[in-house]
Each structure stands twice: as C-alpha cells, then as structure tokens.
Image (tube, rainbow, N blue to C red; front, side, top):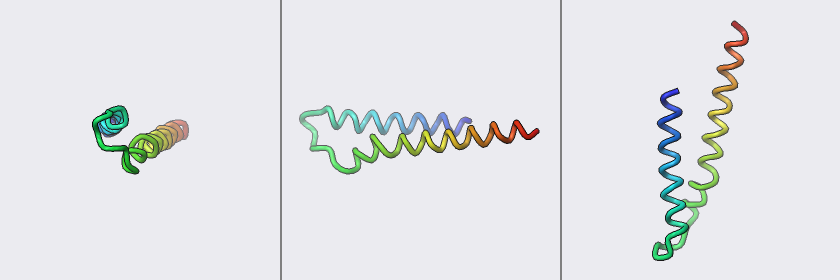
Length: 63
C-alpha cells in the first residue's frame, strides 16, 4: 500500500499545481495538459486503486 500512498501524494501535488495555474490570473492560459491533470489522471488513479483493493478483497475471500 505504500506505493498507493506515494502515488496519491504525487497526484495531489500535480492537481494542486494545475489548479493553481487555473486560478492564477498572471499565468499563461490553461492548456490541454492542465485539463488532463485535473480530470483524467485522478480518475485513472482512483479506478486503479479500486481494482487493486477489490482484487485483494476477492483473494482474501477465497482463502
């Protein structure tokens, strides 16, 4: 589970940076990369976490 916590910290840092760039009026306009960081990356991370925890739960039920 340590890898998931590290991944979560990295994702939150990237989302915080992209959100700051959206809110910053002096920064360059948000591009496609910021939309990917704010939308797709967290969704993929949550889907992978769900699949991992579900698989782990299924394995424990079989024992």
